Length: 465
Image (tube, rainbow, N blue to C red; front, side):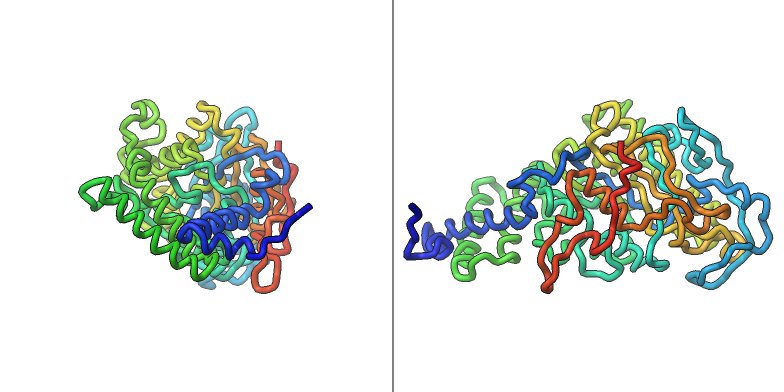
């Protein structure tokens, strides 16, 4: 027999224990909301990956100069392109432009990789090269929103926020979604890492370079006891407000952030201090390289591994600023792509090798992608314009088949023509490998069930081992 209380449970908890009951209720409600019902039921299916490392290649790497060789470009170099030309960003269409770099086959799989990525090529048997990705947007800002959030306009939750919303985090002392900033924030700004309409606790936390990656991480108080008293006063004031308002995302998120920030004061310094890593490990990542940007990205990649070890769910790495520009070479393709590749090639290979030798790659999904690719004809004489119609991304670990190429572009490397994919498919597959059904991870917003993949997306089962 069930008894009905004369006072609703929420009201009872709000009026009891000076508001701490309300805080407890809010925490429980926040957990239930944040889990998308997954924490009480487990994942939708058996996960292959526990964490994601997203290697964001800002600006758009040229697919025909990296992982998708096209001999026809060599043959027709300097001639007008015979393929139908889409309107380009700057409408400065030149002749067919051959790749300045040679390709060779690597590994047991024999997949071709250009001279830009000799170190990453050593890991080719762990990579699934997807050559048929497309985007709905040819301009950086909208394409970045699309890549990061599944929607071409700002305001939606990023894939890191959705991941933590669905699965929570295994780390008690660090945020579940961390962005390691190498120096370049994507066009579109911090909205690429935003929580959107999800609770504010799921917004990406930006870590800059250096020993103090987060503001106010060093305590100002002269003693731990003094800081504890301040924290207790803040809790009392916040809970008194909650007692009046009831559950309120902004207040609850602020409380959670205060508490997490306090725990981070002890965990972050140890995280960023890599002096305890062996000399061999540091050299593997490129921390002793001559090129300063290689050392910058090497530190990011090594910290990314350490974050996975500490249970952080989603880590994104942005690129360092090199001489020239991000991967956005509208001119001086050779110089720009070589500088960017020099910065990231060895650290990425070091990350993959380190994860594998530690037995972590199987449960860590690594994704390498930019917002679009580049045209096979020149912009002007020595650059390439934006190309969203067919480009390359790759995935490794986390249940992905290694040593395979999926999909294809046409003979120029211009249009995806075989197993054509869109960003929604990448997101659906990522969530699937994490044990999440992308169609069931939803939240009600503006009278509609919203999800990362909107009303699109298919899991690419052919690339799953």
